[in-house]
Amino acid sequence: FSGWPKCCSLHPVALLPLTLILAFFGYCFLSPGSQRLENLLPGARAPLLLQSCDFHANSFTAFYSFRMMYPQPKVLTLCRSDVLVLTPWLAPIVWEGTFNIDILNAQFQLQNATIGLTVFAIKKYVVFLKLFLETAEKYFMVGHKVNYYVFTDRPADVPPVPLQEGRQVVVLQVRNYTRWQDVSMHRMEMISSFSRQRFLREVDYLVCADVDMKFSDHVGVEILSSLFGTLHPGFYAADRQAFTYERRPLSQAYIPRDEGDFYYAGGFFGGSVLEVHRLTKACHQAMMVDQANHIEAVWHDESHLNKYLLYHKPTKVLSPEYVWDERMLRRPPFLRKLRYVAVPKNHQAIRN
Ligand SMILES: *[C@@H]1O[C@H](CO)[C@@H](O)[C@H](O)[C@H]1NC(C)=O
Ligand SMILES: *[C@@H]1O[C@H](CO)[C@@H](O)[C@H](O)[C@H]1NC(C)=O
Image (tube, rainbow, N blue to C red):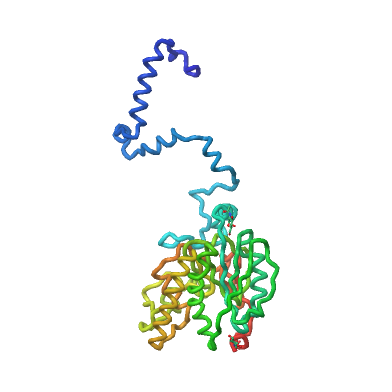
C-alpha cells in the first residue's frame, strides 16, 4: 500500500478483513467454475484470464531458450499491394516481400526437416544434370538437409558434383520410354512408387522439378507446405477460359471452361511425402484410364496435375518467380526475383 495516496492508507488492523474480502472476490472472479465473470463480461474468456495469472516463468525460459530479432509485422501495412498474396481458400501465394526467411529457417530447423528433390534425367536429358545440381547447391534449401533423387536410365552419366554437408545425391535407375510424352507422364508413376518404397522413410517433403532448368536465386523453405503448386509463367494473368486445360470430356483431366483457379506448371510442385504420394498416384491412375480409353491429355502429366490441384486445393501457391522462361517472356515489374528458370536448349535434338 505504500504507493497509495495518504487519504487511502489504512491501519494494519483493518488489513485482515480487507484481505479476506479481496481473497473472496478474487476466488469468485477467477475460479474456473465461476459463472460470475461471464455474467459480468459477456464473451469474456475466463480460462485465458486464469492462464495469464498462472504461468511459471522458469519453465518458459527452459523451453524457449533463444531470441530472434526482426521487424514487427504490421497489421495495417500491406507487404505487397501489386499482387494477390492469398487464395480464396486462404493459401499463401509466395512472392518476394511476403516472407521473412530467417523466421522460416528457424521454424524448419526446429522441425529438423529433410527435403527430397526429385529430378528426371532420362536419355539425353542427363546433359542438364550438372547445371541443375550445381545451381541447386548454391540456391536450393541452403542450410537444410537435402536428398537429390536423380531418376535416370543412364546412372553412369550422372556427373559428380561437390555437395555441402547434409546433402546427398541418390541415383535411382529407371526405364526409359521412346516418346518424350511417355517419359514425362511416367514421372508420376515413378515418384508415386518410390514415395511408398523409400521417400516416406527418408524425407519430410518432396519437391518435384524439371531438369532442363537452373536455380538462379534463393529457393528455400518458404515453398514448403502440405501441398504446393506453381503458377505457370505463361498464364498467371490469363482468364480461366484461356488456360490450356484438357477440354475433351472423355479425358480424366477434363476441366470445363467455367472452372479453374490457376494454371499450374508441371515442372515445379511438391509437398509432404504423403500428399505428393496421393497426388502422383491419382495422376498416374487417371493417365492409365485415359490410355485405356485411347486418349492422351493435351499437356500430358501437366493436364492431370491441373485437374488434381483444382479439386485438391494446394496449401501454398508459388508465384512465377519459381518457374520462369526469360526467352519466352518479358519480365514484368512485379516479378522481383527469378529463382528457377529455363535453360536454353535445342528441343528437337534433345528429344530425339
Ligand atoms: C535430425 O535428423 C537427422 C536425420 O535426418 C538425425 O540423425 C538427427 O538426430 C536429428 N536431430 C534432431 C535434433 O532430432
Ligand atoms: C533406354 O534404356 C536402355 C537400358 O534400359 C538402353 O540400352 C537404351 O540405350 C536407352 N535408350 C536411349 C535412347 O537412351
